[in-house]
Image (tube, rainbow, N blue to C red; front, side, top):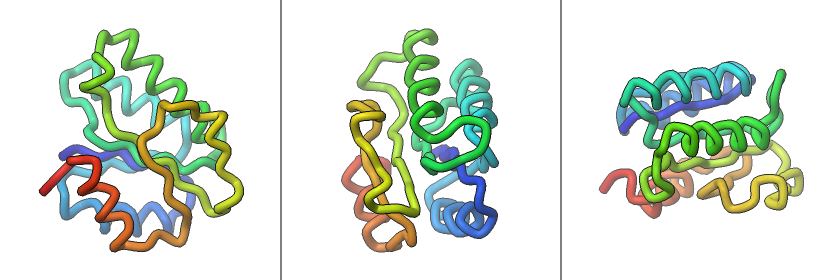
Length: 130
């Protein structure tokens, strides 16, 4: 599995990298623009990400805009909906997540601090590993 984490907080980024590295290769982007750039580069070279974890509150562009840009990139690249990457939206504020901004373009949402067991269950439910 190939994972992209978009997280501007160093401690949260390292935590997610450690948590997800047991499943495969993990890349870390420090802001929304870097995340979208990394995603497009990988998808264009047939090395697409299986999972993208997007922090909602990031510099440059937030997680909602990054989500929209990633899904637009998939459409432009001709990636069918069934083959698109899984996306988990992450926020430090439980009441800060507004699903109307994300429509149906994300797969799951989790609040910080991240519960490791809950996060593993989300990944299993998505069918990303057994």
